[in-house]
Length: 301
Image (cartoon, rainbow, N blue to C red; front, top):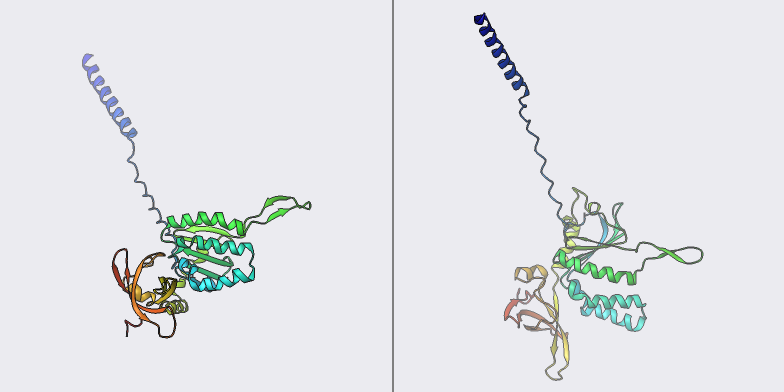
């Protein structure tokens, strides 16, 4: 009897062991499926620059001013504004604009300004003014000053009820926005994607625009210096003719090589028939002693 029980017990033990192994094998977790890798984040769109802001067909009329601060303080602008301010009796707002521009001319001394009129496509502001600064930080500082000043000369109109009691102010008639190192001023908010749609030709690549720009780039640059007269001691403003922008760049000049109130020593030749006009051949920075060629027409002969 004992001999029969032992094989049966052994058989039951083996059966139980195999069943336990089978159950354990069924509970073994399946290997994890590889997860698809997340797509790489799209590279951020770089902010527009002066050259990449507009498409060639964004506006029909363009104007560009280089070295805005120097232009504001130039004799040409002063000669135009002086009789207007003294004789024409312009409104107070106009005087405030002139005063504010002169006060802040130093901040835009080397800036470029682009103005566009008559949109070439729908969805664009009727006018656009873009001012370029050396950095985004400088643009932010200037935007704060614009936000303080523009409401004084372009206040937002007020909605009124029949009792003429102002109840709600409308948005101002302009919109200021910053895009990198650019400040944009428009009547309504500008959509940067509409200013230059994907795949469109840049304004800087347009043949007509480049011809006009190169035409002005070849024009001579004038700098104006105050010189004490040897006999009378009176300070006289002299105009010094230099080479064009491209020539000066090749000679090592930069947009900020000369600043207002810099002391300079100039070598050149006097004009024959025009007083206080000279063709500069070289300019020495008195503070550093650095001498730079002026790229004048005399040097190219």
